[in-house]
Amino acid sequence: MIIEQSKQIIKEISKVIVGKNEIIEKALMTIYADGHILLEDHPGVGKTTLALAFSKVLGLDYKRIQFTTDTMPSDITGFSIYDPKEGGFKFEEGAVFCNLFLGDEINRTSAKTQAALLETMEERSVTIDGVRHELPKPFICMATQNPEGSVGTQPLPDSQLDRFMVRLSIGYPDSEQQVEIIKQRLYTNPLDEVLTVASRDDIASVQSYISMIRMTDDIIRYIVKLCEATRVHPMVERGVSPRGVLALARMSRACAIIRERDFVIPEDVRYVYKDVCAHRMVLKPQAKIENISADSILDRIMNEVQPPDMAFGKRKK
Image (cartoon, rainbow, N blue to C red; front, side):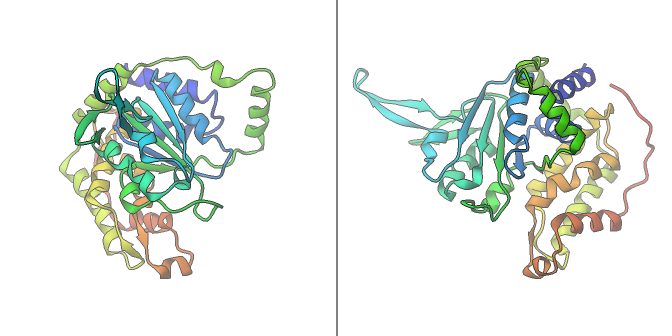
């Protein structure tokens, strides 16, 4: 059931996001892994549209905030307001009280406002005036940001970046894909034509099932070695955190589900390694001077760290 449903989800979203099935697939893996997604790319490539498509196809309650310099933390988390009729304070929910929260252009707001998301992303709750309020389940934060250096942007704090399970980039479509996009939108909006093929309960069920996907000790050690290698690399100031190690393990399990297996193989780990780890690394100034990227470092680590030998047969659920 999970396999067929996943294929339907990808098929529906590909009606809107043309020629980017790998990105759609990895975003779905992240949702299955109960993680959050950072979409970093130039304006106009479909980041917001991807979030809208997922909310509709998965039947999720969706809210969006356009982050600007005057966006306040209370806009996100909510606030207490005095109710004269009741003679006391009542809590007004912020935008994060939904299943899929889109923070659009998150790096255009202040660090204080960005920090309002830290508790929501890690603990799925907000604390206002000492009272803890649980968020709906499932809760996924999908944030977009323009590349660093764009006018009006500022870097996300490291603690914020570390809470995103993956960072994905949609990229520009090729010529044929752009022709298809134009033809799609001549008379209708493709978003109006996508079907809801899953529900909140379906997503919650897969998120629970993911812990049953088997990982051998060799695979676990392979994941740890790949992440530890980032901490000792001469061009890296700060490598992947323990939270990143756990994220890589969970994403690898989600990849196995999409690949129709109930166990993880090295290819699953390698497929999502850069998406999980690149944004968690802080490079030394020398790396920037020599134009060495996090992705190139991770490629080299994958070539140097030997994967465990395993039987690569498929075992369908």
